[in-house]
Length: 249
Image (cartoon, rainbow, N blue to C red):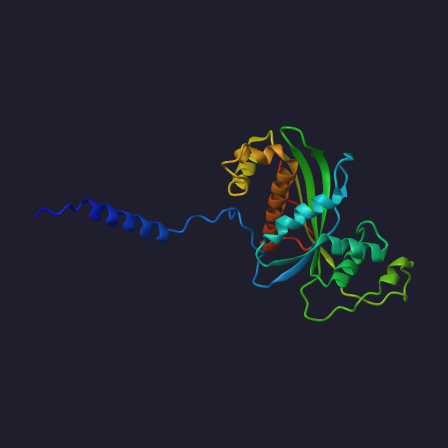
């Protein structure tokens, strides 16, 4: 009697393809361009309300701080403090922005964090092709083992005369990165498309072009690039202690 082996062969082929599919690991969605904090130490940073110098009134400073916060949350080695906590500390210190290293230290001290990121917007054009000019300043505590004395917030409201302020550990502006990202520039456009891979639904109505249609998504891309420059500055042995500037045109 002749045995029909075709069904058996089809079944074996199907099982083989299934096993091969299980053994291969697809590329994780949204993991492109991951950023890492230099060194092995876990640090805690906070993002301050954004300073708007663009002259465009429709810019929402807290929204942009949230966009920076979201991008920095993805940096391996960093724990981020929510922006609303920083706003509360600003209110307790009766300040609208950080204007000195002393104020930056007070904010870090009250939040219990290692560094404060202060975003600034210098140019804003949401129309196609979008354009965003921005900078990020990092104020960070020096890496010392000694516990810095806590600062009384009430002292910030007094005139800083000799003798009425307790000594405190200095805070340094470690890095300032600046960039003007104009999507009409081919290099910037290529970077934006690379960022969009894994972050925009390729099967959506706009696909990767969503990064150029949604200004919030485009701003997220810009902040991602600036954060990468900032981390590069920190990891460089030649990074100046008083701050360096990296620009993207």
